[in-house]
Length: 408
Image 1: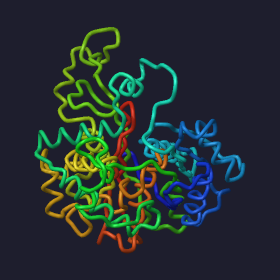
Image 2: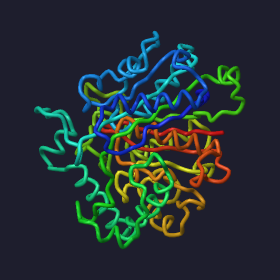
Image 3: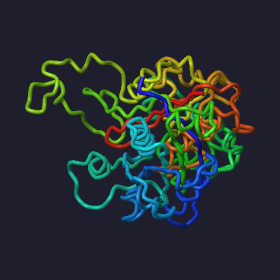
Image 4: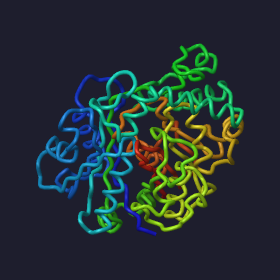
């Protein structure tokens, strides 16, 4: 095991479309996290900023941008960009600094002021960029990808549009109870079915919006936590940031091809005649598997999960990728109520991205904020009874894995 780090504080700026800069959202989330931890900004030895590439130049240097916004005090600063996985990679960087003895207390911050509509690639010609290629060559915007993935689940596993709608109904019911959620209104299956088609078979209410928002965590070493009076804090037990393996037979956003270098004897070969095809499983399944192995737990130990529901169909896929059920069994798990609040393994009791929308650098941090509140027993009407172990899961562009396991 790598070693635990304590979560002393968690804070968020509510999601929405506020019309202000991302720095303001991150600063507000950081102040709330520091207050929650009972610490002053001057107690922080390092700040790790999850970067945004859409917020102008300050977004590329998020660590120092947030440090400046909070007031220069000499802290180390690091900026991390991993698209939708940025928050988890920032947590991993903070954990590494703490375990290496570089800082006793690290502030992790992510915030975004997202554009309206779906995300577009940055301008210019970049033929070596798979994200640029899927837009320019395939015309595959995010909603198109979500629709194709939903169609695949319908064809392979027999999922139905009604199953997808049930995911929205479940998550919206939890979002209605979350003061930080952008959408706080319950919906019915009928209302989902009546919303406009965006990318067949997915409708408007099946797909998450783009949002503004911020999230922050205060992490520390276990010895500092004890000195600070936190005898039994929530602890980060594992962070998975793995990359795919060749061959990738189920294409994940944004890949449209896989690289055979790992299975050949070419100049880029790193494994001789290693048969990478024997590893089994998909990229997303490998993300959770690495987290479980590091934490020394399995799917049966989980109290709850926060997963990346860019679309309702993608949430169902995560059930299988996390090992909550067998392949093709996700819809049945949903139908029986196992993933609802009060079920055997509640998923997205925060309301998920369905209720929040995407504030890209903040969302993986927000997932850990929810785990923190649940494991502390302070989640109010969303509380999962007896929560002891939680997992987060999402992925970022270009093969960025993202999963965090927290325990108490």
